[in-house]
Amino acid sequence: MAEPVTTETDIQENLLAVGERIAAAAKAAGREPVAVTLIAISKVHPAAAAKAALSAGHRVFGENRVQEAEDKWPALKEAFPDARLHLVGGLQRNKVKGAIALFDAIHTIDRLKLARAVAQEMEKSGHRPDCFIQINTGEEAQKGGVLPGDADALITACRDDLALPVVGLMCIPPVDEEASLHFALLGDLARRNGLPALSMGMSGDFETAIRFGATHVRVGTGVFGERPAHKPEN
View (tube, one colour):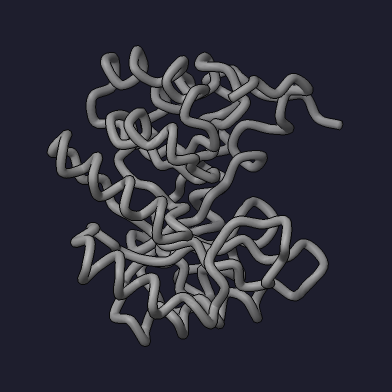
């Protein structure tokens, strides 16, 4: 197993390589490369790795856990004020206040109770990060996300009733199924609801996701190498 990379040189080279692959995939799909945002997934990696990517010029990152991000990112954001942080892991209601304070986008709104808590905290704080609705396209019991058949109702409630800044949809396809089927389903749901953003595709399948319209791809291993063995507690 490859070791995590934390040097600026390694990470800069990886960012360039991933960027070239994104550009090639976008052009092959008849799209502009600038239409695809690379979210560098720094979850579990140390602050030094994120700082190396920041020093290399990258500015959009993703974290899975609110507590880990609270430990890692305030100092990084102070040093790099134009950095943008996306929450790509599940959000518990008791973590909503911290998430709204720190993140610039939340990709995992998947139930009405959570959406209400997010809306209430946005009202209190005045901070309104972009929101993505997570869709459980594979209808997997162990995975977060609203079922596709319930998605339209949740999107309407979030956008119209709660006035959340919903910009798009997110999915994580089952590991043992053809990802393109799930990306196509997510695209159909987004178009039906007039949502412009699609958060889909990771290190192993982001080029396919771009072919199906991804506007945000979430790449961790391709940028930072394998994750460290220790995973911080939430």
